[in-house]
Image (cartoon, rainbow, N blue to C red; front, side, top):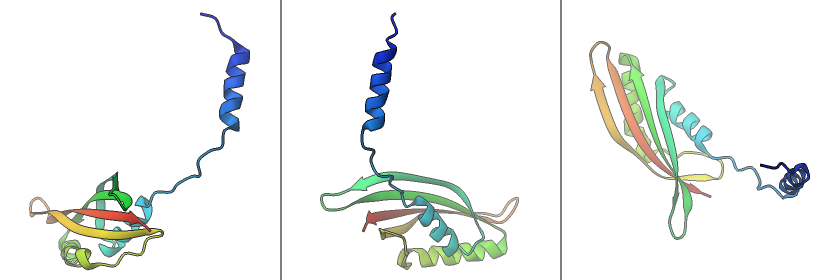
Length: 126
């Protein structure tokens, strides 16, 4: 194998000279902050996943968020969160929440009272 340092330098120069795509911020951080705020500050984030979504006329992202509420006070806030989520008007930069739904609710009483909620949200680029 032969190493050509001039060819390597030329390749690096071409890569560095190429215009870069503008940095695109995805909305997940604003979304998680809004969802946790709606949960009353008593929810623990278990997981979040995001995948791109597109139709013929719109593009955006589909988010799945799992939250846990531990203790009676937190469970009461979790139940209020479940009731409020579908009709809540989110304010996210350059995004519209087109759909928000609760897909899983799981209550546990042992060893501690706990409520686990999984929600799905569809965001469209504004």
